[in-house]
Length: 344
Ligand code: TRP
Image: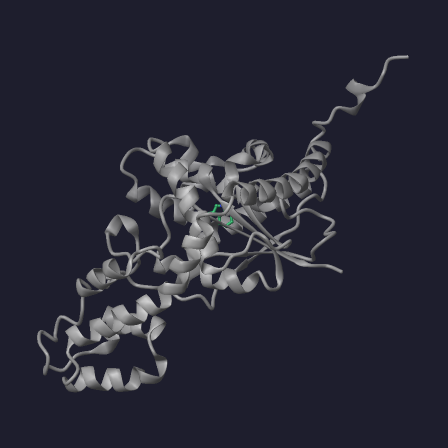
């Protein structure tokens, strides 16, 4: 029977935060009930922005594995694989071949590359400019034709990754047309994921903006961080009417708080009798109630052989990768069967 497969990835640049949970992890945890899952820790892609910080990436890989497991991703299941990008040489090889199929201008015009390029602290490296091609390899290594164990490959990602997935499918089509049909199209899976504003109310929770609450933060850190949160600027003190829909504290209550109490909370804020201090206290409590089990699980997992989980996942990925690369080399005439023939 065909199983359905997903692959998705994350760059290890630090411990994960509530924004990762709402925007990705929560959905991934439920996907492992239904799919064969590959969760790629994209340490090579992390080098596009952190090539000068190898220790940070090393640490971050460990943090990401711990956070994955703390929220309930479970690599002890037979259908769940954690894969470390740098441990899969087939990815590097496939990336090299794919670079020949993509006009360089396609990289310059990629909207996500353009946006990220503006945020770089120095001139973009060649590796940065072509990382969407390496991402295409991440995906297509697991997306070959004919589908044996799965009928299609889903890639759960945020909106910003769509240009990369379109490029991936273009590469697949170009390869298939030029050589032989080796690759299936991948299917992006966006939607029904939330998005969490930063503690400062800014668009996005992000470590570089200093507006994050980490999944591993201690209860006291959470209290402090919530205490510093931005609120509706028009409500300066208790008694003044606030606008909950403009207040990040209220948005967090919507996501992590007691939903049965939301209307009363909004009403109290609008009418003025609920002050921000009290509302924040409630939020810190709600967040700590949510994070408690995650912290406990993390502490438990810290004692486990994390390297073994990665080794198993890497092996599974390489088993698939070896088969894909045989097909790729054959299609590209890089297997040179005639050279290996014994002379008679
Ligand atoms: N670019 C993704 C990010 O920044 C990470 C990633 C790497 C990825 N390889 C992938 C996502 C393959 C989906 C599929 O979050």
